[in-house]
Image 1 (cartoon, chains in turn cyan, red):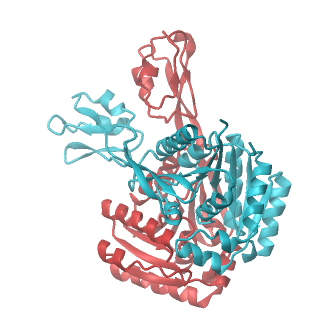
Image 2: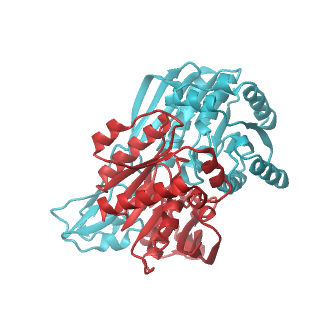
Length: 291
Length: 280
């Protein structure tokens, strides 16, 4: 079975990734699995209201731990750590768990051999049933490391379920930005939808997101959300896309009834009207996603 | 005082409110730490200054002296060194995190490190304000490295009052930014998404023991309440900015509403008095 994975990203946060992900899923004809890869600010469940069926703890990389009694406070570990994650405080080395990446340099350099590894729970990966199909989502504990690893795990679970249950479409709600979790969400996907909006900031961020898709060799198309908030800037974005050869898949207007539906925890599929099926059709055509 | 403006959810208006606070107090050092998508200069005005690269050491192998022991591949927890049991191991640069372990474990001393550019820092003046911006190179995943280097650069400035425009989310890039703050100003919006992500942010600032206050932006676009969160985390709302289409349009064009919306400017000035009254 050929599984197709569409990921929704944006560069800039708050352009409407989550709303679009849920809305597109509601018009896709085939069975689908959803994934929320924005693991440090996950919101898709707030629109899909899953009934939880599975929950597993997420550990990430084991990190450094200091045996205080043996530590002489020599500071060699602090000097060796490239992540600024271990400091001598009151004569003893203390690990900053939010920053330790588990590289083990400190274990190697410690003359007292008083540093070892420990595993800490960094969040949970969950599965739930929704009216639109299964949802795989996760929550990284605040301040945590390993977002990329968590996203990779989440996508693996979604893909595994797609394989075993014969589902051919995965729709993933991606994180904002262009860093570690975004790279982890986009790498190996079949198509990326970049949600933009008519503002100078969103255009700047769109360029960086498009460049990232290019580097990762993932084909992409652009959706301009709230286009009527500035017709002039919408034209600027369209022109930029035209000049760069980036396909514009469609536009969505700003309408109060759409915002109200999301505010009430509902998918605004009805409120968006014909825009949605047209958009989904354009994604399938441009992304060559028809099976 | 070093203020970090953060939000959890993206698009709540961190950068708009940061720019407004800076325009109201131009003697504050402006620091854009949203290094994946730096937009503060767009809202402040034209930037003049210089750029310097941010680098990170990446491991390389001098193949001729390699004794093919495989210790480096065994030591690397990121799976960045592939060794097939014979010959010279191969380093995958995009997976290398520059931790510096492999040069230490190599018995033949054949692994060395070479600086690779992972981003840049822009430093200068923006709209008359001392300005610093970290900018991650597209394709790099070393967000935290660029943030840390940008903050290090900020320490060389004369200004003791900082305003840091932070990245969205609640993961390590935000933690790296908050680490240098005396207080966190969290910008939220009255929607279910805004509330949910604010809760994560409040857990984080409580964990890090950073004094925290809230700004509610776009009041009127939703009716979600956060009073219970304020009580649970013992934080106050210092300002409310109403949603206005003209403010949104102004921001979209790259003009801070501080300059052309009298109500917005007044709210910003009173926000400053509240911050100073409670936190300085």
